[in-house]
Image (cartoon, rainbow, N blue to C red; front, side, top):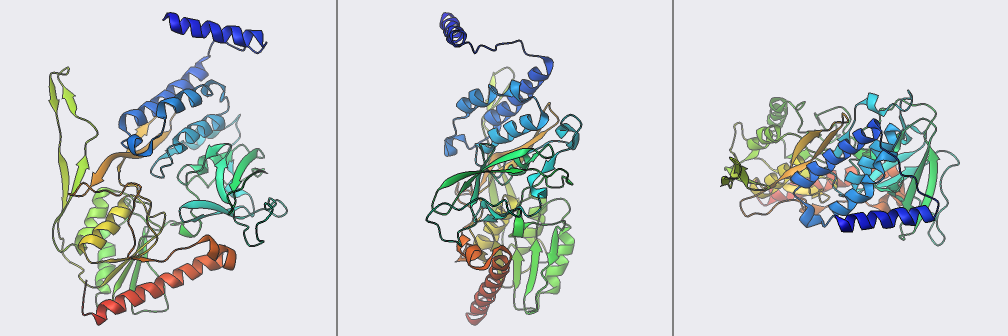
Length: 442
C-alpha cells in the first residue's frame, strides 16, 4: 500500500509540475465503458487457450488500452479501441460485433471506408492488400519500387493491427471522418495515408472484406464450369443455412463423373454438427477428435477437483461417396472447414489443392458483453488422437496452387482471381486423371 501511494504521489507531482494534470472523477458512461472492457479482457484471460503459443503480453495490453477507455467518448472510438485490443491477438478466429444502434454517433449512422467509391481490399495469402483507390487519392509509391508494385498491404488502421475478421469495425465510423491507414509496400517500406469515409453510405460492410473469396449469400452451390466431366461443388459455410441433405444429393448425382471437386476456398467455418453430418458421408471408417480441456473443474468450494476427458467420434454415414476427390483450399479457409479438409485428406484419400489454410482449430464460444456487443473466439482446442492440431499450422496442400502478389501485379486483381481459378481447375483435373491412371479410386 505504501509503495502504491508513493507511486501515485510521484505521478501527481510530476504531472502537476508540468502543468498538465487532468484528473477527474469518472462519470457513469465512462464507468460503463470500463466495465465492458474488463468483461471482454477477462473473458479472453480466462478462456483463450493460445496465450502460451502466441506470447501475447495480455496483462500489459490491458494496462495500455484500459487507460484510454474513459476518453473514448464517441461510440465508434470505443468499438475501435476494443477491436484494436482484440486485433493484438493476430487471430482471425476472433471477432466482435455490435448492434447497429450502438454505433450511432450523435444520431449519425456509421458508414464504412469500404463504401468509398474505388476503394477495394483483397486478401492475398492471408493478408489484406489495397487493390483500388478513389480517383486521384492513391498514395505515391516509395522510391525504388517498380511501377507494377502498386498493391500495398493494409498494415494498420488508426494505429491498430489489421486482422481480417476485425478490420471492418475499424473502417466504420461517422460519415466524412478521416481514417488513417498505414501501408506496407513490397520492399517493407511503411507509409501513412489518410482517406475520408464517404458522406453517406449503406453501411452493409460490417463483415470481413474478402474480395474474390466473398461467400456472398449462398451456403453451397454447384460450380458452373464449361467442363462437365467433374462434379464441382462449392461449400461456402458450415453454418445452419447449409442443408446437408441437399449437398449429399448433389454429390450423389455426380457419382458417375470422373471425380468430385469440393471447393472450401470461401469457407470460414461454421458448426461442428453440420460439418460432421456432411463429412461422415465420405468416411471409410470411424475417426476421433479430442477436446483439450482448458483447466481442471473444481466443485463444492474446492473440495473436489475433476479432470475431464472428452472426444467426438465421427462414423461413416450412408450414402457414402468413395470416388476420386479433390478439396480446394485458400489462405482464408478456416475453423471447421479446416477440420473438414484435414479429415478428407488424411482419412478419405482426398487430394488437397490450393493454399495452406488459416490454422484456427479451436471451437468457438460467444460472450455477450454489457455494451451489447458479442465477442467470439476459439476457446477449446481440438486435436486428433496423436495430440496434433491445426492451430497456426493449418492444412498443408498436397499440390500448392497459390494466388500471389506477383499475379496481381502482372494481371490485375480480377484477372488474377480468374487465372487462379483456372489453374486450380487444371491442377484438379490432372490430379484426378493421375488417380484414374493408377487405378486408385481414393
